[in-house]
Length: 330
Ligand SMILES: Nc1ncnc2c1ncn2[C@@H]1O[C@H](COP(=O)(O)OP(=O)(O)OP(=O)(O)O)[C@@H](O)[C@H]1O
Ligand SMILES: [Mg+2]
Image: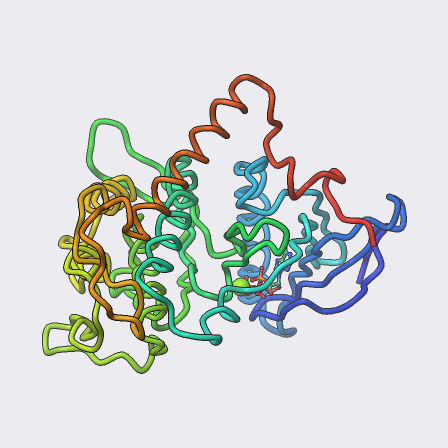
């Protein structure tokens, strides 16, 4: 391994084409970073080419998205002896996978999750990037601010729109990478789209509500996921989730804006919202006492304030969790 000015502290995770480490920079005040080392099983040139492609994509995408607090900051990359290295901001926090193991979530929790993760998707889709591997091991929650962060853009792709047609094509040759259970049929067949990411988020939301792992989910004869009858959830959220995870991509949501619009519109008026699976007492009729209404109101008010302050130059982007500039002191 060629670690340049970094020293490994411990392994953070291992995937098919590499290992991610927590490292400290010996050149830079022992600041902490996450270093992804892309490797490939020897004697197989195809794997080498794939590892290189994943590395190049992740570098390009992180560079494009740099400066967003809900995506790791890009720091550095290099290649040496046909091995590839990517250094990014170290996120102090836990994987969403850990939260899912803890307990089943209430409808309010799920709406909060959806609102936050869909806003991140909106940013990346606006840049024509499809993540293609959204799952609970690729979403982290910062411990300092409880913010969600989307990681692992190795499977990501940049969409190129061909002028004057509705035809679209991927800028790089397709690499069929996905996590079983979280990928819709069109992605499994090699045609990922923006709605493939929306599908994955819908599956996670259903997993949050039901506690059922995607590979244990039952399907009907049309390939539609059977989940609705198994729990108490408002008609409004159930309809949104059902549309997110439709078998036929033509019936799914095609863009994040529409999901968010439906989500927010529905909760502006009093609806039959069920606070949690275990606490099914009737909710007060006043919309102001509805927990989801309050969460959404606060979230929108917070986002507007941040946007106004940022625009006025009062609040630097990334400030709270990134005060020590691109790293964290030990
Ligand atoms: N920036 C980061 N800060 C803290 N931990 C991270 C960071 N990036 C990754 N990790 C941890 O390392 C694990 C593996 O990283 P990542 O998801 O990027 O790659 P992978 O799944 O091993 O690779 P791939 O899916 O591309 O084969 C993550 O699940 C997470 O636990
Ligand atoms: Mg991963």
